[in-house]
Amino acid sequence: MFPLIEIDNVSKAFTIRHNRTNSLKSSFIGIFHKRFRETKETLWALKNVTLSVAPGETLGLIGRNGSGKSILLRLIVGIYRPTQGQVRFPNGARVGAMIELGVGFHPELTGRENVFLGASIHGLSRGEVEEIYPGVVEFSELDSFMDVPIKNYSSGMHARLGFALAINLNPQVLLVDEIFAVGDEAFQRKCIEKMEEFRGEGKTIIFVSHAAETIKNFCERACLLDHGSLVFLGAPSKAIEEYHRLLAS
Image (cartoon, rainbow, N blue to C red; front, side):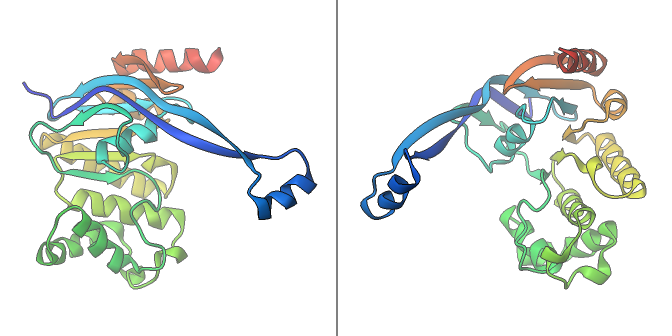
């Protein structure tokens, strides 16, 4: 079976710029004379990550905060481009992503407007968006808030709208980042049930969670990242053991 996603020796670096001056006086003078001394620092958020994901597989991503989990999801969905290596979809799979609260949403636009904008970015025509819109509203349970600017949404409402849009794009790959960290328990159960439904349809799911039991019960494999490196890929129970060992070290 050919992989649905190929991540080949992928690294991602960010350049951080620092302006340094010796004193308050030199800082003030530097405003007018451009005497700031700029230094650059390279931060490698991911380093030489290689893995493949099979059609229909459910893969969990675990690791400490800042380990690179969200960066990896952003590379897969195409928000970031790798500094080195490649992310490939051999069969051109459509990806639905709920990777971070607010990502892909414009705060000044309403919920309705953001659904149309987000779906169009994923390649849907206006007619196709109109077809999926009722499903987004129904799953999110935000009917009374769809004409409200999402800058007024709570974090739970952001999560509801983001997840509802992602699943209604009819994706072959669903990416989910910490959906269980926000929202009420009833909505979390609803998300799990929908992901179970997707899994039963043979769709691929990659999700980040700190909930060990969810990873063990829901995933075929788990990927453990630490300081941007892939340190374990395999059975979820073993990945969680390694994760706890890292936390204790």
